[in-house]
Structure formats: structure tokens, C-alpha cells
Length: 324
Image 1 (cartoon, rainbow, N blue to C red):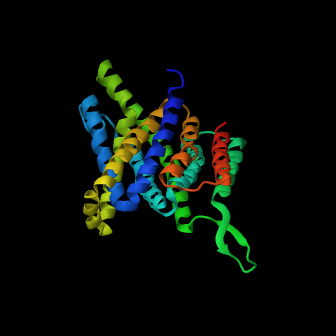
Image 2: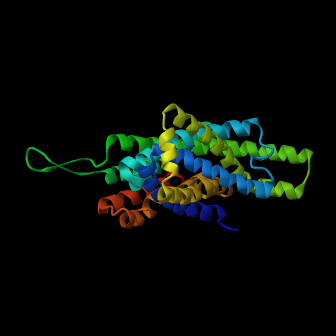
Image 3: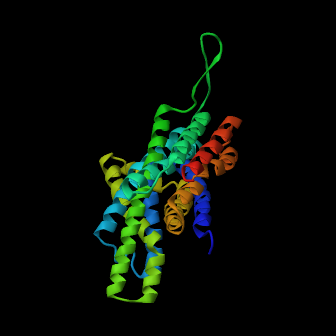
């Protein structure tokens, strides 16, 4: 079907909007580390069930060492480090501003793609980066509540510095993680070509090939599961984890967020970059900061200024320019 990758990428933006709202709520109730471990375990079970029903195995079939290596690196950067930053920033600055800072992911993926995959970058990329950052600045800078010595409101960051830095880190990690994901996907495709050239089976080959994005996500999830399990154990969050499991409403919302995010969202994002250029897919997936504004206003009663709306649109325009 024409524009399959573009349609998938736009759907991912909507899924990530829903999952961001779900995880902002659940994270404030459960805590960052317990929520991450819970939702990655649930995603692992969901993906494992899908793979078992389609390929006959809960683990990726015929994936070689290089595939496991680079997808694991992607999982470490994107899931463990990036998502820890992401969920912590949800708590500190909310999902709306965090998703705005996530527009840094496409520039990061483009720079990483140029350095690691040899993809080209033009002058438009530099212009796009400047415009994206300008849009972000417009959204996060405004009048402070505190009155200065001259009884005037001063201008500065509207967000806590820690939350801002965490969101920036999350955006950079997601962008770099996408690059390593694409590298892993390329190796996985080669692994399957090699396997089926020796053991031809057209029906099985088609099924396995169609499931590459989901199988690749499973490798990334395994890395995330191990990483967060270690963090929970070594930070003494096991009691908090068991307490989180008893929170029925938070668990229900976290389950919905997991279905939309690590299961469908991440897998469809990998599928999108299979069917269209990384830049186009990343641009459409970067629409989340615009889509999330209205539900964030009604669900969390967040006040949204015209400057913030303008900043979000400018940031997304910058992302679009980055890939022209």
C-alpha cells in the first residue's frame, strides 16, 4: 500500500501521545524504576505471545550475533538510559513538555545516522536544528511567578532544570537508539537472507520477514528488562515495586500505556522506518508534542499559552526541515 510507512509513523505519534499521558499518571503513583520494570515485562510478554503465535518462538529466530549486539546497544541506550530519563522527566515537568523536548530525537538520529550509518546531511539539517531549538526555547521560557526588586516579573525557564536536562537526555538517547536499531535491522535482514538461502522455505521466510520489527523490539526489551531489574535490585526499590503491583488503577493505566507504547508504538516505529526513510518517519512521529496539547489540557487541567503552542509548531517544522 502507498504511504504505508508514513501512515504507520503518524499512528505512532498518536500512540505515543496516549502512552505519555498514561505513564505520566502511573509514574507519579508508582515511581520511575518500578513502572519501567513493570511495563517492559508486560511488553515482553505481549510481544512474546505475538511472536509465539506467528513464528512459533517467543525469541527472534535466526538472529545472529551482530543483530543481537546492535539491537541490545539500542535497547540499553533507548530503553534503559533514555526511558529512565523520560519517565523521571514525566514526573518533574509533565508529559507535554517532555514530549516537546523529545523533538530533539530526530536531529540526534540524523547526526547519528551520518556518523554511524554514513547517511547524508545537508544545510537544511542545520537550519532545521536551529528552528527546532528555537521552538523549544519559546515554549520553555516565559514569565516567572516571582516578582523581582522592581516589582516586575522576570523572564526565565518555566521548568525545573533537572527535569529539563532529563528530557533533553531522553530525546538524545531516543534519537541515537533509533540509529542502532536501524543498524540491527539491517543485520537481521542479512541474517534471514543467509538462513533462507541455505534452508529455503518461502512461507516461513515471509512470516519471519514480516515480523522483523517485532522480533527486533523483543531483543531491545530483553536488554531493558535485564537493565531495569538490575537497577531495581541495586537501588533497593523492590518494596516499592511490590507496592506498585498492588495499585489497581495505576496498573490498569500502565497496562494501556504499555500496549500503546513499548508493544505497538515501538514495533510500529521500527516498521515505519522499514517502509519509508528514517527522516520522514521521525518527522511524523515527532508530531506528538502538538497532538498531546489538547488531551493534556483536559485530562491534567494544564494551562497552555499561545507561545507554547507556537513553540511546539515551530519545533515540529524544524524537524521537518531537518529531513528535506
